[in-house]
Length: 314
Ligand code: TUI
Image (tube, rainbow, N blue to C red):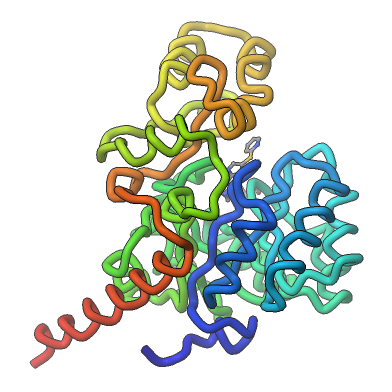
């Protein structure tokens, strides 16, 4: 395949980003993806600045290639994490779950490439105006915090609204998904759920097992009522939360239920208190393999689909 413009801009071989999954995407996973030619991204999630700095150092000890940090804008440690990425000179910052406007200038001054997740055309236009390097159009098929629109609907509208390169995310886990995203105007893809199964991804064995066993209908969205909709595997925790959410529980009670739930899932595999974030495409993730094999499989699959696509052209 020809090089994508996002590869030239960031200095990577393949236009594949690994999603910044909270408490999952650590320095080791990110470095493995970057070393394999994609863009590995460390998730800051709700962690503090020192945790993020440590993960950046771990990644740097494994790879000399560019790495990214995903900054979750609802984090209580947002101010210190925003400074750490500057001090540690990461090549790319992606953002999620909010509006990063107040940080954009300081990151740009530090020569960091800023690539925000945009869930709408309005946010795409705002981020373009504020000087983002590229945009990630993430549809609600994704795991974790979700927007309203699907990738199929969001992606072409974001592409029409900006001249910046657009990365597609949400519901992509193989070469077919990547090819479809390119046809809708994207110049690369971001995958979270597919990289959850990577050999280098440290999640609890229970999490891995549930992911590999998941089928097409195995995820659900909770938290719409609180304004923080989140997609996760349909576990006892998720069903219970949903029952409470629509059964009149107070916001405080729901917040109490959700506190620390991502970490409980990742580190302890706790089926009762843990929230196992995963995208709708989980049903297509069937084996554990090295990050490098995932990237090569998606790239080769994409190229094969694009070649077959010529059969439709007269
Ligand atoms: O951010 C994600 N996925 C995530 S973040 C996360 S951790 C979390 N912790 C507590 C509450 C909620 C989440 C787990 N998964 N994906 C990127 C994403 N960003 N999806 C949607 C958005 C988004 C939503 C609103 C981006 C911008 C936005 O702006 C709203 C506004 O106008 O401020």
